[in-house]
Length: 463
Ligand SMILES: Cc1cc2nc3c(=O)[nH]c(=O)nc-3n(C[C@H](O)[C@H](O)[C@H](O)COP(=O)(O)OP(=O)(O)OC[C@H]3O[C@@H](n4cnc5c(N)ncnc54)[C@H](O)[C@@H]3O)c2cc1C
Image 1 (tube, rainbow, N blue to C red):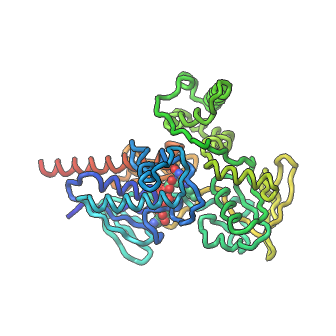
Image 2: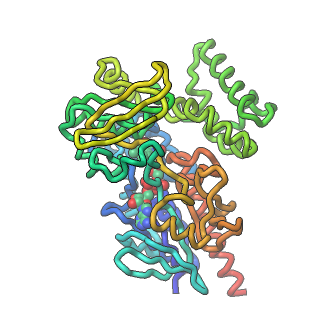
Image 3: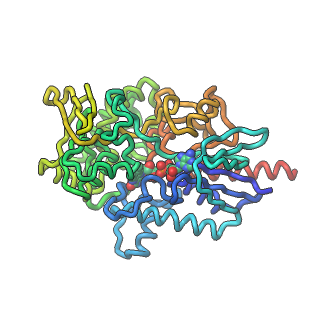
């Protein structure tokens, strides 16, 4: 009997893990069961749409799916368009095609078997040996190991908007693009959030019709843009200017700001400072105490995010033009009293520069960012895993904890043998874990560890 590994979720993380498993010589025999709720495999939330205007926010030269081969996607692009620059920002759907083609190729050349299952996993239960995965259509798959690659949780609904839940004027999930169609034809729309999802939603709305849009967030900060010829991060060691500093947020942030200023004074670009730090962010995060991490999340994160997670230059330019034209207005402050009626929504925005105001709009789209507090909400699957104690939550509510082989740490702090996690919720441990350059490393490391353990078991059995 082959060793069966179920991967739940075929977005980037699940697909890249499957590809890594299929590319290794599998002894003993291996069967990978890739389970995806959406009709399209190997796409995930970010790369499943066919629209040509949504661009990647990482340069082509750093979007390779294989660890140690950052340029793998660039090679793919160059086969189609020979002149593609390493710093180019390609359409997101092209990356989806790249993932699909690589999964097909890995399947065709592997001595392991890939089974593709369309369905939503509702529960994962431990058996005397292995696990069973229950699907929404009542099928039950029996497997030896399970990799959870569930991706992004739906956005949190802030407390001030609790009364709007279920109201037709409130689009709770911006990634449910079928429900976003509701706002078509509206003269004025409010978007909660000013991050990447908010910008994505804004441009999606503006492409359909010129619409007045309010972008509302606590700080009103819009992500910066990349350079036209984006630089791929250097992979040197932890920069010297940080090495000897005490492990506190203020000391590290002070040093980073100083370094950025120095670079700019010398005619350089502050972006390079952040690019160079990228591979070291997990080390810095892990050096901080829990108190320091909390301080960072409360006081610094909003500023960090707009510098670190930048927009493709063309997207940044479009947003700036929309703001300059007055069609898009950024409103900063905290939400106060909010309600919806049959004509639209009314939002009190307190504080900010102007001492508070009321925003009226026909619809409100919630782009407040994914809610990773699985103890409170989460999908039916994560709720079941949490209730059964198989999945724990980190102390800061950022995601889940795993051991060095990506095996889940349960609610009692014990390793769950055979249950793995890979995806954005690794940010609880590594902070940076949402984009391809970080995830490709985790997917490869998980697959390698799984293979090695399997080979070891086989050797032990035959000895
Ligand atoms: C709109 C958007 C644009 C982005 N652009 C970029 C970019 O340009 N560059 C970059 O590096 N990163 C980008 N990202 C970051 C993105 O997080 C990663 O690149 C990566 O796509 C994450 O992949 P994932 O597989 O972990 O999650 P997801 O893409 O969310 O995939 C998870 C998959 O699991 C499936 N699933 C979940 N639960 C179940 C279940 N119970 N049963 C069955 N299937 C299930 C979902 O249907 C989904 O397909 C973007 C993210 C978003 C949301």
